Every structure is written in C-alpha cells, then in structure tokens.
Length: 382
Ligand SMILES: *[C@@H]1O[C@H](CO)[C@@H](O)[C@H](O)[C@H]1NC(C)=O
Ligand SMILES: *[C@@H]1O[C@H](CO)[C@@H](O)[C@H](O)[C@H]1NC(C)=O
Ligand SMILES: *[C@@H]1O[C@H](CO)[C@@H](O)[C@H](O)[C@H]1NC(C)=O
Image (tube, rainbow, N blue to C red; front, side, top):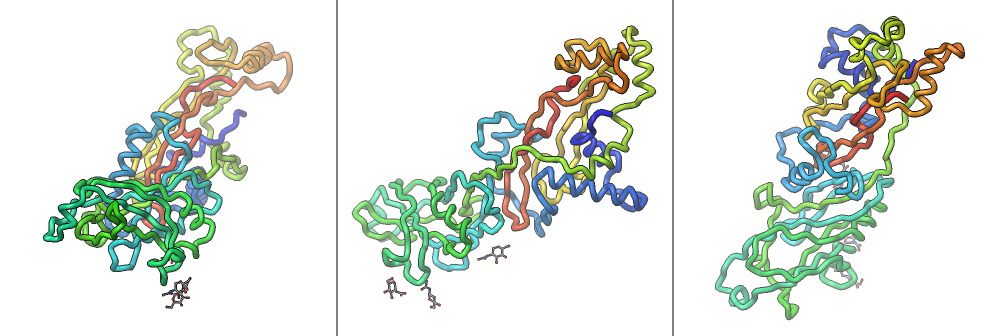
C-alpha cells in the first residue's frame, strides 16, 4: 500500500463535503473535525483565527505584497522574493492623543519566530500652509523615529533611543518607511519593553517643528488606507510539516490510492494501449476554503489547486512516469513476481510548490504566510 498522507487529507475533507456536519454520522463528524484540525496544523495554527467582527479592508501594502509574491491561485510566483516565510502587518493602537506617538501590539508574534526586519510605514501628508513663516522657509526636514524607553520622560535623552532618521521634502505627500528592526526584536523578546514609538520632526538646523507643517496620517483622523503600520518580516522555521500518525491511519481507509482489482486488471492487460490513461499522472484537487469554512478569515486565495497523483506504476514504466531507478527495478521485480510481497512503486508528487495565504489573525492583523510543499507540481513513480 502506497503512503497516503498529504493529498489524502485533502481528498478526505473534500469527500466529506461542504459544511454538511448535520448530515454526517457521528464517526464521519469525528473524522472531519480531526481532519480539519490536522489541516490547521499544516497551516501552522492550533485553532482557526476568529473572523473579523466587522468587514475590514486589508492594508493595500499587504494586498500588493501578496499579488507580487503569489498568483491568483496563491501559488508562489518567485520563491526568492521573500527572505522568510511570514510577513505581519500591525495597525497603530496608541491611546495617546498626541499625534507623534505610535504603539503596535506585537503579542501575536511567537517568541520562536526569527525577526528578519521591521519597518514603520507612515503616510506623510502635505503640510498645512500657514501664516507660520517656517512653512515657507523650509523645503526639507529631518524626521527621526525613537523607541520610547520611559513614557514619563520622552523629552530627555534617557527616555528614548534613536532608531532611524531621514531628511524628507517638507511638501511631499507619500509613504515613508523607517527601519526599526532593533526595537522590534527587543519587544518580541520582552513584551513589557514595548512602550511605543515617538516621531520627531525638526528643521535641518535642529528646531522642532509642529504638526501643522509636517504631518503624518493617524488611524484616528485619516482614511484607513493611510493608517500608520508596522510591517514585520519573520521566519517561523517551519519549512516542512511532519505528519502525525493518527490521521494517516484514518486516511488510509479511503480507497482511492490503490484499487487492487483495478491494479490487477491493468497488470493483466498492460500491453493494451487503451489503458494508458490509468498510468500515474496528476489530477486536479481543488481545496475550497469556503467549503472548509475558512473564508471568514482567509483573504486570499479563495482556494487553491493542490493536485493529486493517481494511477498505476506497473511495468513498463515510461519516462513520462518519471520513475526513479529504484522504482523501475521494483516494477520489474513486481512484474516478474521474483520476490513475494513486493508491490509496484507508488504514484506520488515528485515536485512540490509553495502557496501563499493572506489572512486575518486573532488580533485582526493581516498576515502573509508562505507554505512549502503544498501543490503537486508533477507526479512520478517512486
Ligand atoms: C495586546 O493584545 C493582546 C491580545 O489581543 C491583549 O491581551 C493585550 O492586552 C494587548 N496589550 C496591550 C498593551 O494593549
Ligand atoms: C512613570 O510614572 C508613573 C506614575 O506617574 C510611575 O508609576 C511609573 O513607575 C513611572 N515609570 C517609570 C519607568 O519611571
Ligand atoms: C526623567 O529622567 C531623569 C533621569 O533618568 C529623572 O531624574 C527625572 O526625574 C525624570 N523625569 C520625569 C518627569 O520622570
């Protein structure tokens, strides 16, 4: 019997049908919930995130990023594009009424995640022309981003640490990105240390400017598409999934991989060309997130084609079956029946591609994650 692990889990879910819990018998229900739990594990989660309470528009940056790394079906376009496998976005949650303070709640970042880089994205608004002569005299300003060390004391040098500083054109209106990796690394190691960020704008001569002349959009006062955002690039070191045995046991009961009577028929008439279509090949296997009940928290894709491999690997194995040398020899031994109990080789994925998921996590932050080995690129006899 060929191993029935990854694809069989998906086939099992698909065969158990869309949200038809009521119609399922007790046993099937148990299998279904076990399968869904296992599928969540494949996606690196213990529980499905709660769907956002209200309809929320994901940040345009995250949508653009997703469309850059993934095609419509979620398949990775270019595996080299992201350094890690996770990109998280956080919106400003500051309670301060002061415009220059920002706070991002990073509690959803696991301590085991490797921090690769962190960016503060601020939308710079056009300054309000004012009678203030400073507005007309200055074309450039210096914007500095500080990590707050002591909330009581942000005006002194002890209370804050400079993270990033840049000269900007006063009259521009664009997104500005500041690297703040150091501070975010510290915050993920020790949540208590996160006291937020402070942004100070000065003239090139060092004079602090007020928020009329140089302004950044805030969550409170401006359109959601211009909200301050922290973008965090990480890697969760979860490159390959390991398979737990429990579901494999369940899954192997589904009779799709190896139909012995069919197998025998093929063996008996293997010279008949008309049966060639039964040889090992790739078939579509669409995983529909709506049917699984995940469409509330997954933004993109709506589903993806995982494909599955099916067909016989009996002698003679053509090159289109992409056999390993080992599989070729095994098929010969099997055909000659030289040794008892030697099955024909297995029809399995021999190339796997990664997919991307854009979703809301429990804190309603938008996350982009890349998952390896999710789509069968081709099938072969192994
Ligand atoms: C951060 O978010 C978590 C989970 O939503 C919450 O329990 C915690 O109180 C928040 N922390 C702050 C400082 O707001
Ligand atoms: C800041 O001030 C509050 C009271 O105003 C105090 O409880 C707290 O310990 C102070 N924090 C630091 C870091 O000194
Ligand atoms: C700010 O910090 C200094 C030295 O760390 C301390 O002497 C001063 O009292 C602090 N000021 C406030 C307002 O907490």
